[in-house]
Amino acid sequence: MDITEALRNGVMSLMKDAHGDLSVAHEDAYPLEGVGILTADTIVYPLINQARSAKRFIVNEKLVHEAQMELTKQGHSPVAFYHTHPTGTSSPSARDELWMEENNSSVMVIVGPKSIAGWVWTDRLHSLGKIPK
Ligand SMILES: [Zn+2]
Image 1: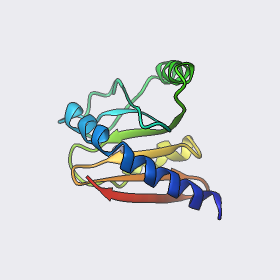
Image 2: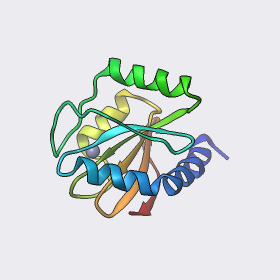
Image 3: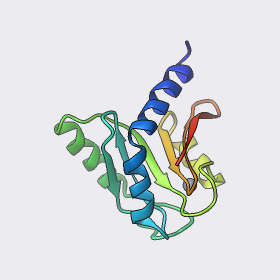
Image 4: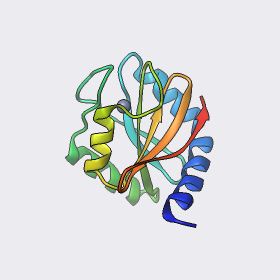
């Protein structure tokens, strides 16, 4: 089993378990994009989308780092970033792909209006599975 296969199983199971809270994150941010951190024990931890946009997200690196430290201190393991697509699909935009390439190996879960999908960039973009919303 390669790393992608192991990741796929883990992320699929995480998306199923966090399905309800990820759907709420989509609704809470609507009509803008929401963004945040997902932990191994399915905590959906929202961050501020500084872009305040329906088409993109920007997060402050320092706040991301602080949130990760705080979650870890509380015993949660940050394992993925999520962001929402208010409309459209749960596939990454060109900008999302660039973000993933720059944050190599970071798992990104995208919550669309109809589905939730996991993605990772290693040498290229890999799908980690999709579930209905
Ligand atoms: Zn996106």
